[in-house]
Amino acid sequence: MSVKNNKTHKNSKISPNSLLRKFSSKKTKIKLENSEPNISKMESQVDESEFPSFKSFLDAVKKASDSVNLDKNLDFISTPQISDALQKINGSNGVIPYVKSVNGKKTFGRVLTVQTNELDWGTSVKAIDQAKVGEILFINVEGHKAAIWGELTSKAAQKKGISGTIINGACRDFDAIKNMDYPVFSKTIVPNAGKPLLNGKINTDLCFDGIKVNPGDYILGDECGVVVIPQKIFEEAIKSLWEIKNSEKRIITLINDGKSLLEILKLN
Image (cartoon, rainbow, N blue to C red; front, side, top):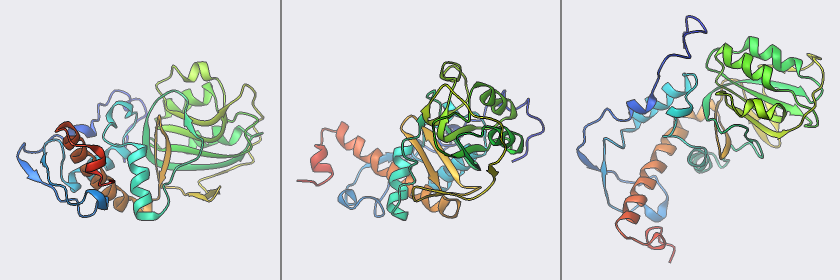
């Protein structure tokens, strides 16, 4: 991704959703052989203009991951669906436990990792300078009794063109952050902070609670939570996501036609 300067990205209108609408309106039957087994035999007409090919869907997802400030342009991808996709292909849903949105903003992109502790907010500041435009900071913190992120870091990161901050720890300045157009996710919120010790690490492999987050992995965060997508299985995960969206689209069509969800899922 190339960006000439940090001032231009705020005014650029990048809409991955528009990529998903550039298809003919012809009807096509989509077989769900790789979807959930209970609904694999269902037949329904799907409008391709609303449901593009996998290649087009993948292109839209990649476009989104390389862009900045896409809060309003990410409605075609969600953490519940991608967590289901990861569980299906990887046996692990990729969810970061207990980390939630602070201000209701959505973010998606590649990760710059940070490892620090609750007494050190200096490493977070240093990471802002090292991050590339469009990247997401993922900060893993040992402890959560003091904040390593707040209003000033959020403003600095937003100005830099960073796409969001995920904190497996504590942040503060909730009143300021909730009104900012910058995505922040945190495990908890506290009023106090530590010191600029600068004794953490940046761009390092993270491992906590049995979860691995590596530099270059993808992160999706919305109001349901945060999910990490390992870069080595990124396209496979997006293919699984596409199949799930096909399946859910068909189920909704059948529900609208008056079918019982119990019958559709063949649970009876």
